Image (tube, rainbow, N blue to C red; front, side):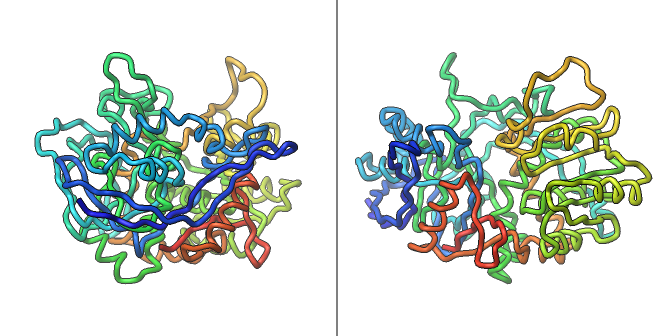
Length: 463
């Protein structure tokens, strides 16, 4: 039995009478007693990798200021999840259960130090969208159903991205499509009829990505990095951001599921917001709708300039104070010949009476991610002049499509990653006490953090 010492960001909560539960994030050290691997598991070294913050960790106001406050109350639930996910490869100690339950986040990657594929695991048909490459350029995305048992592509020294959740085969199956999303129906925590309940990474159920050291994982909760993409990334440590962005790029694929399913390519797009999520959507559009005219509205010209570099021939940026959108209307009309767009994607919380008028009749309003989708107030009429999609924030196995797209960009447009790596919308910190303080501030501010330059930032931690 091997003793593995870990450093991790420990998420706790403090109960204050006026503010309810507030997050407490500290640097902590712990130990896992690792057993010999059994089929279906791997060990990953996260030292030298990254993890990213995601606003799904933050609360939405009210007494529970963040989701950990409520989740950490369910002690028996945490023990059950640990036994199911790690009992075969980790000694069940109070400290091990504590690490699994108190470590946060779900964006990140690691290096395989040992893997034991389960060759008897039944294959599953999986829905993917892969870039079409013609004459050295990505010209679109093609629907492909591939068969996988989620045990292949892992080898010692190979990189792998952590999936945001452990999901069952039923909800990974390309034959189990939710007609509203175009992706497999979301996995859940139901245990009826022998269903294996979903286990979300970093939300007290599975070990989070904010852990530095050797960590165990089920192979079916990882997405392997193709060998040529790994070579490209390891040529420059700054390119680690590519892998940290695979999981949120999977969210982008999920948000466009109905369009992907129906092959509806938009001619005009309005993106509101200048953060990393808006940037990833622009990268996606370069492959999905390369000829679409795009207007991006944001508050910071430096961020907008970096976003325009993704596709300068098709992207027009408009600086806005977040109050008046008259310039957006003028930019749309000048760029597309119309004051409305086929797709309107607000990546910041705005009321529908502001964003709705920008959507064409029979167009699509995508409410980005759960926290913003919930900002849409009031009853939804049975008939509207445009469609709406409330993005969930990810689809089962969407990381496979996201990884394929990143690989396609590395092969055809490696310069596109400059915007992703150098955007002022991201702040990098080394793992340590400073990171713990920043993450605590970010979490208690509802997923918002301002850097030394005064700009709103996403935190990414280098380990």
